[in-house]
Image (tube, rainbow, N blue to C red; front, side, top):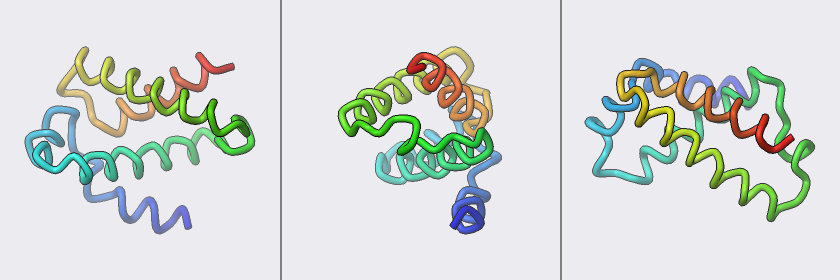
Length: 99
């Protein structure tokens, strides 16, 4: 499954926070899917199993909101940052905050 996720994410890995919005900003669902793919790659690379780490569904909803906030902060701070890097940073910050 991860091979499929990585293959699906690959075409977007060169995008920055700003360029992903330039390219897909009018398609919120597409941007969300790209971020979801990159988050899955980040979680895999960090060997984090969210369902194991955060078994409670309400907590997962909270962590999702926290992730979105962290990602927005990272991209606001540096629109030129690679989106994959911003997503990875947001995953790291979110999981550290949740511990």
